[in-house]
Length: 141
Image (cartoon, helix red, strand yellow):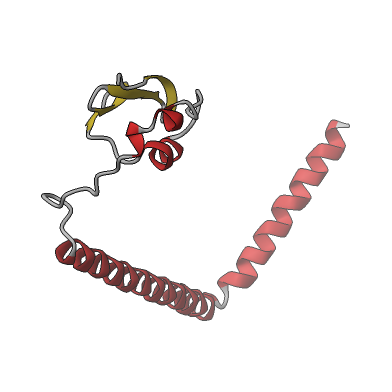
């Protein structure tokens, strides 16, 4: 068994050295071909990166234009009176997300964010944990 492994190993080494010598005889053409292929690959990657960069710069310019044309700070939020309707509060369910609550009650008058987020109206509130309704208190009439 060991003799077979030794023979196989010697044969593999001999085959590797023969192909290395044959390739070594014309290494300049091989190196030139590899160099051209590597250069072409790098040029292609540079071209792709430049396209991606151009696209990102365009998208940033578009977003900056939106921010400049519609500044959000100081802009009043459209007040909703839906929160005053107790029927809307009684449609609340544990686990609802913020968009669902906003659709029922409208924008809150005040938001206190933290591990638990509180949306507050005059004398009612909804609290969220991980973006889901955890509890609420209907406004007093």
